[in-house]
Amino acid sequence: MKGVPQESVPVVMVSLSEGTIKQYRKPLGLWWDFCQKKRANPFQAPVSSVLEFLTVSLSHVKTYGTLNSYRSALALIVIGDIGQQPVIKRFFRGVAQLRPQSANMKKFGTLTQFDLTKKLVMLLALVTAQRVQTLSKIRLSCIDKTDTEIKVKIIDRIKTSGLGRKQPLLCLPIFEKQPKLCVATVLDCYIKRSASLRPNNEDFLPITCKKSHRVATTQYIRRWIKEVMAKSGIDTNTFGSHSTRHAVTSAAHRRGVDIETIQKAAGWTEKSRVFARFYNRPLIKNIKISKSIIT
Image 1 (cartoon, rainbow, N blue to C red):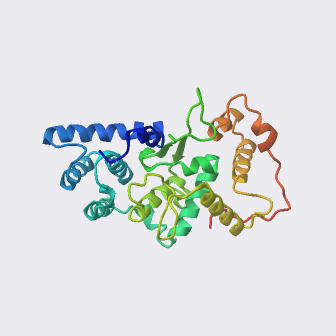
Image 2: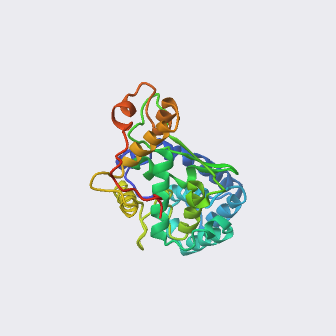
Image 3: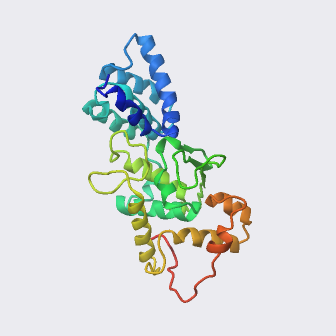
């Protein structure tokens, strides 16, 4: 119905990961039920029906990102580029405004979008000990916030994905006493700050800071982390963005965290010898390190 030749359909479908299909299943099911009640064609519905559906959905979804994933699901099947419709864009600007600005968000009001982005990716790298590839796969629709923590499910295929292996689950506790170093607080602020900048139907969390605001690739994230490291007094000719995994896991081990916990957090299997052979490194004392990694 969108003009895709029958023989091209399998190729188009391959572009959708199993995680994305699973993510879209709920909103598409709700959309189907909505259209059945309205006696509307779910593939040729007018913009007014899409707006009505999104408005109804807004009453039970928790975040802007979740509703944005609903829009992405509908854009996949509804004829016409609904994401580019001016009234749909304006509707989502309204959704962003309806989410009240928290006190935590005000704490970072002096930071530029670029500095906030770099602060976020650096804290994520330090707190989770994950690869840059994993950080690039964080989706708004897979972020679940509670009163005590934020949980992030990684549903896309990454380097460690495989049969019988669990996908990463990032747990980010809320540290109310140190909000400026609390990754959950920074993440919440970043989501709200970037809502009006986010490209249409874009679900991936990190976006570039220039006007086009595209999805941030691993190359962007690596560069941002190295820029923070350099500003913190770390020799980036010796250490790169991947060094955060070495630093975090080694520091955790020195402070008494058991190896099994470290391996689970970093995505290594129980039998893996990677940490013992490559990551548990001694400190290099003659390198000048700033008092604070985050500026």
